Every structure is written in C-alpha cells, then in structure tokens.
Amino acid sequence: MYVCICNAIKETDLRAAARCCRGDAEALYASLGQTPQCRQCLEEAEEIIAEESIGGNMAVATAH
Image (cartoon, rainbow, N blue to C red):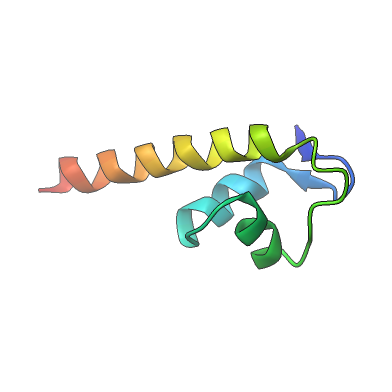
C-alpha cells in the first residue's frame, strides 16, 4: 500500500526506514530522498513510525 502518493512511498519502504533511521516523518522521507508535498500523508506516516518504534523497543526488551 502507498502511504505517500505524491512521492510513491510504500508502507514497506517507510517501515524499513523507520527501523534503521530515527526522526519524524519528514526526516524519514528525507532519508528516502523525498520531501512531503501535499502533506496529507504525514499523520499516517507518523503512526507507522510509532508502530515500528514500539516494535523495535519490544524486540530489544525480549532480547534481554
């Protein structure tokens, strides 16, 4: 599924970026070589980033 139609950013690409990069949606878009255009996707992008952050923290917690 596309999260950002303007930049053709797929959910899988955004999730992968969130796992290896830190920051808000704009920072992750930049890591993908893009900038938000119409900005309608940013709320959903932030939710995805938060999900990946929680998932990453859980993986660290279970590893200990």
